[in-house]
Image (cartoon, rainbow, N blue to C red; front, side, top):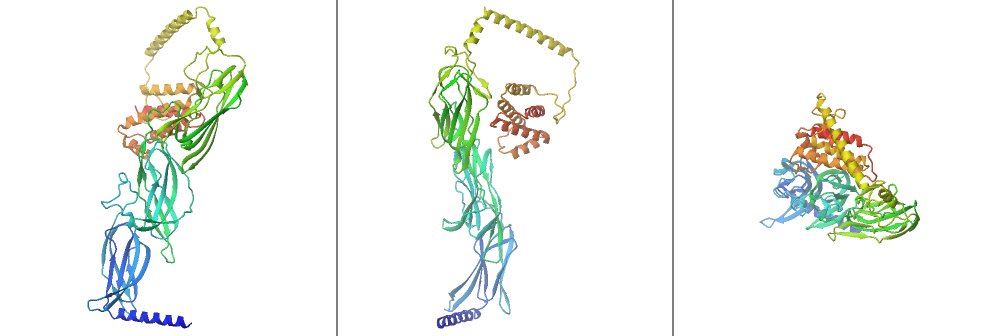
Length: 589
């Protein structure tokens, strides 16, 4: 107790001494700011130095958000050797809006209020300075102006340059000089270009770290991690994210602070030319294995041929393998496809298993052709080919002579593209049993030509004699009135319909998607500066294209892409796609 009493007495003596010095001086109140000019969001500190003992306050506008308060005391000597003691009060924070402000401070003691000098400041918009960061040219994600801000954000990226199809990891990173307690709102960054995006981290719990950067200490945390797969080459601009943070400056109530991050970019390189024929679109690192359910079978048996692809990269985007079967086997139905893929920091990682069902159509001892698959390895900057060993089969039943190799170039079996099966001996024998078959075929050809010429002449005559009909096409065709298609458009529809009639709907959708896209870009002329859907829509409106045609155009493009890249061959909306395509082509005439 004796020690505590002596300490209390010493503190009281010190306070009385300080008070006597303060009260014995001529009142002097000085207000200053630590930085000029000031930008919105930039951390600033207003300091009041007073030799008057009292309550200090700074008159700040509502657009100023406080981030902290510090108190202190200074001791100096004047020219006569007298001790001068002043009290300092510093208030830190950021301005949320630009403008011109006059800031004042005051000190109020028991009987009187003393005012400081007037401080005129100008707060300008963020980025108005000539030193504004040009994210299209700079490789530095953090600018010098960022270091003056209370809070700023950058977009971290796993690579600055990458190949199309290669995974890219993006993440928002926040640097703060204030005590952040909560994330109130987050608007993620966006990418200007054609990409596939996957959120790989969905949580409101963040881990705050302490980091030093160029002599500055920050509290940092990361948020909103995304995995991105650029589909085409070029420069991809990554637009800023925005965030509202809640912080506490030591008072009773929390406050909110809103800011916008820097932007950035990445360069996406095209894949090298000369891709192998068995390239399946894979970009990354992959391995492969194959097996067959059994090596001996009878004619009519169904074998299961399994191909398993494992790896990481754009695993989700690799295409279905194409089978090259010997004459003794044919595909039976559609393959069974199983995926086990996770989206991680390394990309799409896991495996895809394809089970092809193969029917034995003739006997003999044969080998299944060695299956191969190629992918592009970005780390090696070259294509890699994986190749399995041939599989020997002992097939019991009628044998097809190996000398017979009459094949078409390509045929479609069960929806799969395969090499055609050679003609059997029985069919060949039946063909050779017809006497003078070459002569008969020649005569038949002449007859067909003559009949075709007669039919063509009659149809042409009938068309010339028929009364002319008036086909009226409105400026905005509807689904119920399609009366004409421009000449070169007939070929587009005919080609697509022919593929559909053959059961190859994926190719049919592809023809329509590519054709109307080219037609639209021809209509709009120079579209080299258009790199987003919103910009394309604006250009279409400026060119006078009707809203209904714009909606139909994007519906057809989306429907075609979904059908092209679907796991199964689907065509439920084929007729509607064709009808709307005709409308679009009529309009673009």
